Image 1 (cartoon, helix red, strand yellow):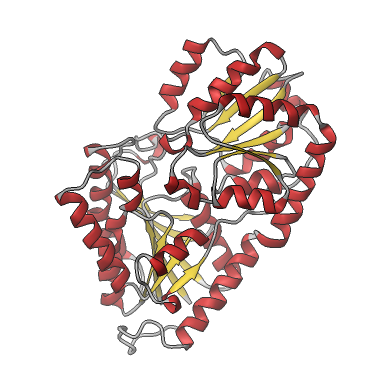
Image 2 (cartoon, rainbow, N blue to C red):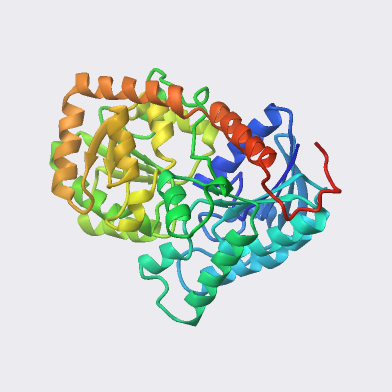
Length: 420
C-alpha cells in the first residue's frame, strides 16, 4: 500500500508528532509499504527555519529512503496571530507538495493544525485515496479550554471545520483512549470509523545501558543525581513548578535538573532560573534522537510534567516511553490517562500538578531509595516491551485499518483507482 503523510511537523525537528510520524513511516516501509511525506521546512520548536533550509520555497529530499516534500511557511511559535499565520501559511503552501507527490492509497493527515484537513481531503478525492484524519489533540477544544480562544466567530468557524473534517474523513485516528472515547460519545462518530494508534517507542534505540560517565563529566554533572526532562518546553507543561521544586532541593548540593529541549517558554524558564538563583538547573538545546540514549544513561530518573487542566487528563505524553524503555524510574506530574499508565506499569511516582513541595519530597524519596528506583525502572522497561513497541503498534493498527476497509469503510471513494 502507498501512504501519503501530510504534517506540518516532521524530522529533523524534535517533538512528539515528529517522533511519532518518523517512527510510523519507518515501520510502514519495514513492512513493505511505500511512504511519502509533505511537510514544512524545519522550524520547530525555535520558530525560525533551520539555517540549512533557508532561502528556499520548496525542497524535495529523501529521509531514510522516504521521499519528503518540504514547503515554506511563516515560521513562528507561541500564541495568537503569529501562530495562526504559521498554521494557515503551511495549509496553503502544502498544496504544492501534495500536487508533486505520487498517487497513494491513503492520505494520512496529522492534526493539529485542524486546517490541514482541507488540502488533505481535496487531494484524497482528486487521487481517489482514503482520507485518514489523525487526531493527536482535540482542536479547537484544547485552545478553548486553556483560554487561548474565546467564544466568538473564529471559534464557531473552527468548530464547524472540525465537524466537517470528521464527517469527510474515511477514518479518524485517536492518539489516546480519552480522545477515542470523546470522538464517539461527544463528537458522535460511529465506532467503526474511529481507529486507535498511540505513541510508542523504539525499544532498540532506548534500552538500559551503563552510565556514560565521560559524557556526564563533560556536562559538568559528575557527582550529581540527575533528574532528566527531555522534550518540548511549552505552556502545557507548567515547568515553573519544576523550577520551584528545584529551589527547594538546591541545598542538598546533589540533585540536578537537566532540561534537554526547547519551546515557547524556554526564555521564560531561563529568566526564572536566574531570578531564583538556581545552580542545580541546566538547560540544553534539543539533540537528535540518536544522541538521547547518552542522556538517559546518566539520568537517575526521568521527569514528565503537565499543567493542572482537565484537558490534559486525557493525555499520554510521548515523553513517557523513552524514559521507561531506558529502564529509568519516572516522576510523573499530572493526572488522568498518563498518570494511570504510570501506576499500571508500576514505573514511577505520580505527583499532583502545581505543588512544588510534593514534587521536591517525591524527588528526594525516589533518589534516596536506589532499590525502589531500580524496581520502577525494570517495571517500566517490561511494560514497554510488552505494550508499546512501535513495530507491534503499527502492525496492530494496519490490521484494524484493513479490517475496517473490508467491512465497508471509505464508501465515498472512487473505487476505480487502487494500487493494492
